[in-house]
Length: 475
Ligand code: ADP
Ligand code: MG
Image (cartoon, rainbow, N blue to C red; front, side):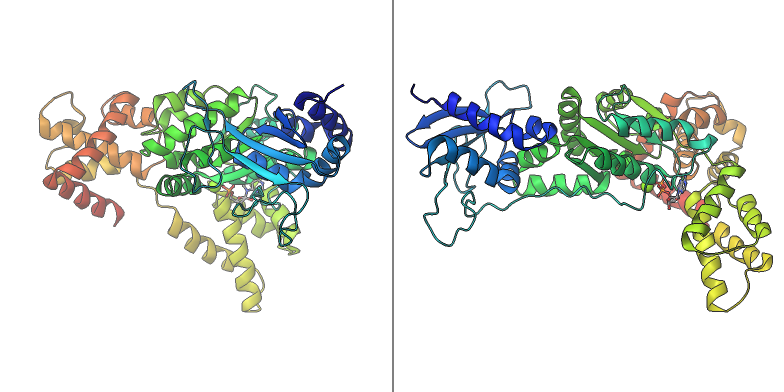
């Protein structure tokens, strides 16, 4: 019986399947199509350049053995890299390899001799000019579930995270959005989920990335004209973790590209985990279509830890650092630093440092001093009342006028400025800002923030108001 591309490849596949994990087989071999057989050269079609690089990096020996069994020692493997167009355009386009080739629509074939032709190529699959890509998960192994202490404040987020880690892509928590104020454990929990997944499913491709870095990479890819590579890189993830997505606000291009990546992953049952310092309703300048995606899964909030959780976190940290501290000092810290676990840890660290530097015992007095410094520096949230007072004084009106229903331009502007600064300087939600500044709804506050942003970049006089008020409020 004469051999066809299909039969040869299907025999190769049975051999390969017996030799690697099911997960790896599904990920890396099922998507491959055998395209043609010419003498001893089998052409296979892979979905992306990245895919090809991954095969080359991890499965070159296996492929070689399989192919040699089928086609003998003269066997050759030809990759055809054909990417699916993810933008709804039916016409598939083809990756260029090498990049000097400008023809986009023609399939680019890469001949890879199984036998070395040139002696300097050690790996028979290596194509000159193309580097191998390895995906590092970028996970921090120090952030695990073990040391993410459970309390009332984080129970929902923690258990949802755990469920996701056990069954990535297989729960209704997709995406899982973890939100909450700074220093409450979003980054820690996001890593813990990734670390746990990697432990349970080593073959899964997991990537942790901050939204900031994601944005930089995207901008870079546009500059270098390889936006498609960028997108494909992200679309190959099994689990994508993006930290601090509020940083995408106002960045339309990055949001657009993220939207497409998100859809692709979601449609393919891949898990997306996001963190944000705001609830979706309070996110400003994030496109509606993205916001609605965030709401598809579960939004779980990290709240301020209660007293018992704070004590537990302190003790755990001391235990891990091998430090002892009197009980009354632990209680003192837990009583005085309430809203930020990062500050709590910071105070413990400087307390330990002070005492060991100066060879002093850790006393309540020392603890007081440090907490004072600590809390003074980082906490000093201005209140919405204070903001309204400062803004009204500045425009020489009283607070009632600022809150009134009038549409007089200068009063409307003052009110919008108050809303803008309330958003900027407090943790209050848009809805709560609105209700405190003249019983407005959250959409009005959102509109006010946008208007202030716009006016300050187009109107010099207005910009001066913003700068002056900013100074007064931060003094
Ligand atoms: P965020 O990303 O929300 O700003 P992080 O994840 O960076 O906060 O957390 C700040 C610090 O607090 C980290 O060192 C983290 O390990 C610690 N932390 C937060 N939550 C917990 C928790 N539940 N148990 C133990 N440590 C925690
Ligand atoms: Mg963080």
